[in-house]
Length: 106
Image (cartoon, rainbow, N blue to C red; front, side, top):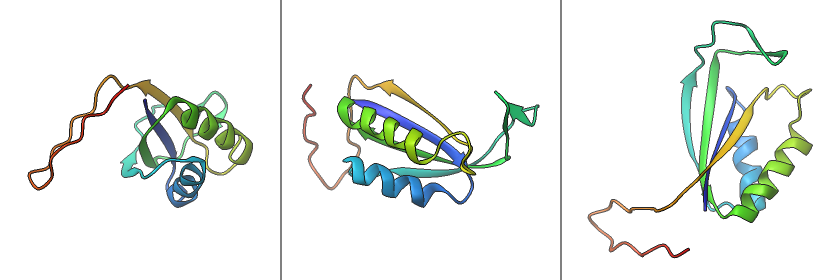
């Protein structure tokens, strides 16, 4: 399982969430953010300070599919001007006083 982080210009999160759901993600968390880059370009991509961060937990194959679809639909020429990265997730803990957590198996 992977935590997939997708950082995009403000206003594009709904497009990204629709794409990741089509690929098999069951949901996402969207965080409003502001970039703190001292330069206005990163790898020749202009930096817009207002950002949205989309976080989702997905299986490895879904992560790979999302990555491919992001590249195909929102490449370097897109106004999204985003980046994505994933981190391997070893465990998931549920924090909810109303429901009994289910154990996540490998």
